[in-house]
Image 1 (cartoon, rainbow, N blue to C red):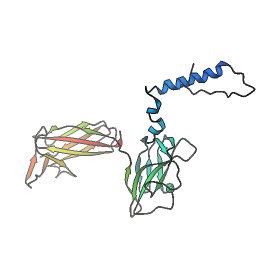
Image 2: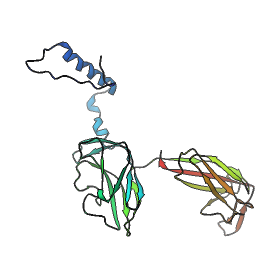
Image 3: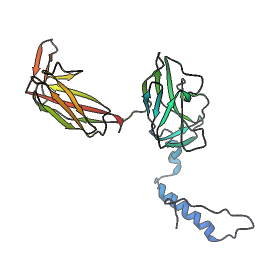
Image 4: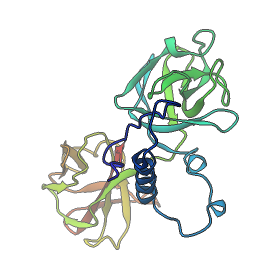
Length: 277
């Protein structure tokens, strides 16, 4: 009975003049080939009508995200990636832990200030993991054969890394509380369950208790402790906002007239996780 895909079969070589040709020598590989076909599955049409799995995987990337670590280094997070050469050959690599990237990983030369850099996964070593290079080239890192660009960053005039970007669109989790009625001098706790405190938070206030009135977006601090609303607590699962002792909001409308939101208003909280979904 075929052992694949539960385990990989080890076949013995047939040696000329030594090995006796018996049915098992041929039937065992036959069983394994059938097991592989069953495991992969039938596409239900002629093979020539489909692209190869290798070519379908040429653009594959899961995680391997470039992230800011400090003014002189980056993280490339753990993940899996298909890394091609210029001819379309591909190597499949997987890093099970994060990689710290610094100026020792530059492809040629040394650190330059006020310069745009690009980050590459490289698969030139005889291993199953990838290494990382940084380069001023946006397409071809020096000295690499198998490579794929992951992202970029800017090394500013002071020699500090900033503006770190990834070449793929990263899905983020978002929490939206919806509109809920608020009154002055109260605290409101909402459960976001984003499992992180690395978030962007936007607080909206509305003159109607159902969100149908005029909306204002809160930037920065409240007017003072008497008039305004602000974030006063954040955990990996909950957020707490507080309204002022006199009013939830005190400010100006689009015409420059002052107005207040006291007890007839509503609030909406939107939180975006900065960690990948």
